[in-house]
Amino acid sequence: MTLSFVDSHAHLSMKEFNEDRNHVIQRAFQEEISTILCPAEITDPKNLQITLDLTEKHENILAAAGVHPHQAKAYNLNYAEKMEELAEAKKIKAIGEIGLDFYYNFSPQQDQTEAFRYQLNVAQKMSLPIIVHSRKAGKEIARAVEEEHFTQGGILHCFTGDLEFAKRMMNQNFFISFSGILTFPKAFLLRDVAKKIPLEKLLIETDSPYLVPASFRGRIKRNEPIYVKEVAKILAELKNIALEELALITSKNFEYLFMV
Image (tube, rainbow, N blue to C red; front, side, top):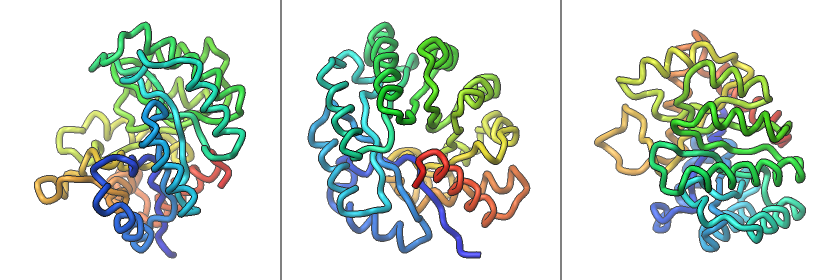
């Protein structure tokens, strides 16, 4: 069986890739990475344009766009209109990443909650899934999804929550995406959660340029899509299945969600 992996979350538009972005992408596609989803920060026109340009150049790069919780205090209706415009033009496959970050609180929690709920409604209107950033805010995320009657599903990106949160969101048609954090020596609680996530709800990601997998820490300074395979290896071991099967299942899950 030919191995083929999907990186469901990579910030290839960030400055860390300015010097060799094309090389990073070509290396990924040459090394068994079939598809990459790149979320764009819609409050940053340059970041958004780089992402959209990548999707024009590479058919296997998909885009999402949204207002990250760190930028929530800047949210306004112009961004909602831009998201709708991009969705109507089929430029984006999801709204995101959006959500709540009650750990850093770079934007006030009230602003974060309002921006998240507004964007839930944009995604519902445009029939798009969402890419969710959640830190210390699982209950609030789930409550917002339920109260806003959001039915499009999506991805809990870079999951670090507990099993109760995962189950609550899986019941709302969400997939659980694990990153390089799963490879960290002290992530035993997260690995225990990962064991209990059904195969049909699993995704993998790098969150590049962040979260270099443990086996490469100290050797490289920047994560990139080729290293999503390190996450897949850990998940395959946890689920006691072959790496080829894990690659196939997570790729099929991604295809189901985005209908690619």
